[in-house]
Amino acid sequence: MRVEVRSSGRVFDSELTPRVEKRLGFELDRFDRQVSHVEAHLKDVNGPKGGDDLVIKLIAHVRGLPEIIVEETADDLGAVIDKAAHRLGYTIARRLQKRRDNRS
Image (tube, rainbow, N blue to C red):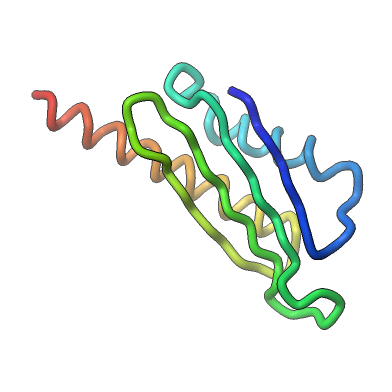
C-alpha cells in the first residue's frame, strides 16, 4: 500500500510522513491486498490562532469500490491522525463486508 502525504497551512516537522504511514499501516495492514494507496491531506485551518483547527482528509483507493473518504478535525496532530486512521479502517471493513454480503 502506497501512502501520499500532503500538508498546507503550517510547517509540519519531517516526522509527519513516517508518522502517518506508520499509523495507516497499523490500521490498514489487514486490507493490504485490497487497498492500493491512500492520500492524506493535512491542513491547519486557523494558522497560529490555535483551537480545533487541524484537519486531515484521508482518501483510500480500494480495489472494486469507489474512493473512501474520511475527514477528522482536532487540535493535536497525533490525535487527528489516530482518529482518522481508525475511522478509515472501520469504514473500509464495513464497505468490504457490505460488498461480500451483496455478492451472496
